[in-house]
Amino acid sequence: MHENLNIKMATNRTFTMLKPDAVEKGHIGAILEKINASGFRIVAMKLTQMTRTDAETFYAVHKERPFFGELVEYMTRGPIVAAILEKDNAVEDFRTLIGATNPADAAEGTIRKLYAASIGENAVHGSDSDENAAIEGDFHFSGREQF
Ligand code: UDP
Ligand code: MG
Image 1 (cartoon, helix red, strand yellow):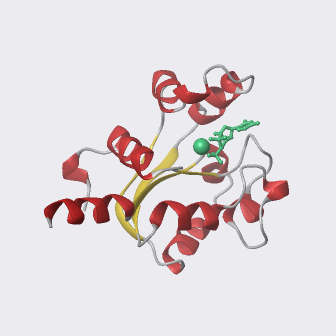
Image 2 (image 1 turned 90 degrees about the horizontal axis):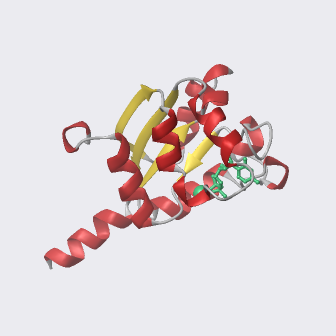
């Protein structure tokens, strides 16, 4: 019974960042509007800026990729909005809402189709698994900041 409850909670949350390009272009409000309209509840949220060490740690899985240096520069160049979101099937539904990594491949109406400039500067992050959603949310927020 308790185990089932825990599994359900984990699958109901994802983690997002509105990346520096989205913040610079004034798209915070429009993107949050779409997130709310799509049925996600905001569990935690803040405007913050990642340090180099933060970005290298957050994206450590990509450290051997050719774009890693650019990715770290991009993600640290200005403030981001970090948030934990809750909804049934949160991880998968949020990935659908943001669209493909490359906005050229993103479906009409998705956040990346609407607001991303390129595969590098693609406006928004969404966790790719329940496990990573929990790790990424805990990277940015203490338990006391999660509602
Ligand atoms: N990225 C990039 N070039 C690439 C692939 C990814 O600059 O060829 C950047 C982009 O900002 C992307 C992030 O690295 O969002 C993480 O890549 P991932 O493949 O995990 O894409 P995502 O999960 O964000 O869709
Ligand atoms: Mg990813």
